[in-house]
Length: 433
Image (tube, rainbow, N blue to C red; front, side, top):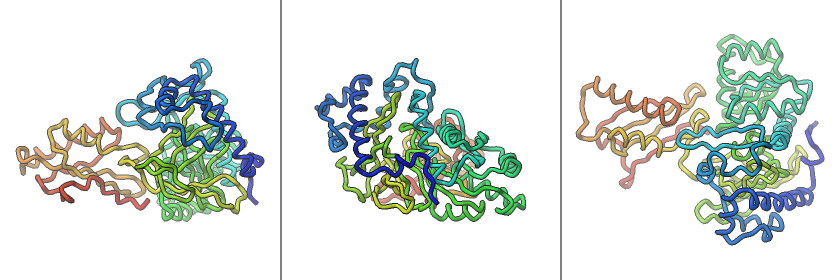
């Protein structure tokens, strides 16, 4: 039988959901107009005032916000409440320049915890469960979000964070963990390690897992379910919107329900920026209608997906989003870190190389790999292996400093990277996601 954390909200009628969204959107637009200069300037430029927004049907009149806007607002530019009312910050895993800082009042955290509690309840968690949170804690939102949700439903919470895999497995066995929360790649690694330790799924008490923060395929889901003997649920979120729990899977596992009492979702054409009808594939845009400290209006996520409002066997009435199918920009997510080809290019150009390179991403033993092939210029071309090793190490160090993750670098002969209509194919992503 399907359980709900807040049944009166999760199974509310479409009319009730729209009434909440209309009222909260109007209030939120007034809030940002009064308190966030960036929004006021953008709205004035677009010729819109709060009086023009009467409900969700007017949402399209409001300007979009991008990650660049949020970075430019660093550190306090988008804060809509006095710092004295804020109790926490989180930050994106930004790898260069300024990060996106997200602020929370206690009320913001309470609502975020509710969203994560809904996700946990949809995965079958109750106050009888032991919730093993192996997402990272700290500035990353994963650990804090699921930790808060677990507290709300009254589960015993193990805030173990990531790493130290054998200790994780010992705790799972000794403390009888039943719900696992972590990235899908770490769940797969836990399963692999258990196998190596000679443990079978029936020797681990886990029954369900909530996995997010990186892309994963249906094949990976089936592997994790088999290796750990659990049902694996997807969860979606962005630091800019609060963190995990923006949407979550139910027992139907046919898309993630968006918490529509807190977030309005739209799909736009990334080229023309027009709003597309439901069921169309396009870029996902979110408006957070209940956030106080860091309100976000029409945020372009760059994630490509489809929204569908259909009757769900779980009884929830929230609209569903499919798994993101890719990005409308060239960002890669590697080991949970955002990587842009332009960052790699910067390192290469700074070290005197041309902009002829290729990025090859793969997933080996459930861990993302990053290989960068770099063309030497004719002047630096050499067959001296010692010199090549030295140069490769220099680029590896530069990339680690820029990206915060390690990459394998291979220097190749001039003109050896295949050109396609005069332009190199920059990214080869071999991950099955």
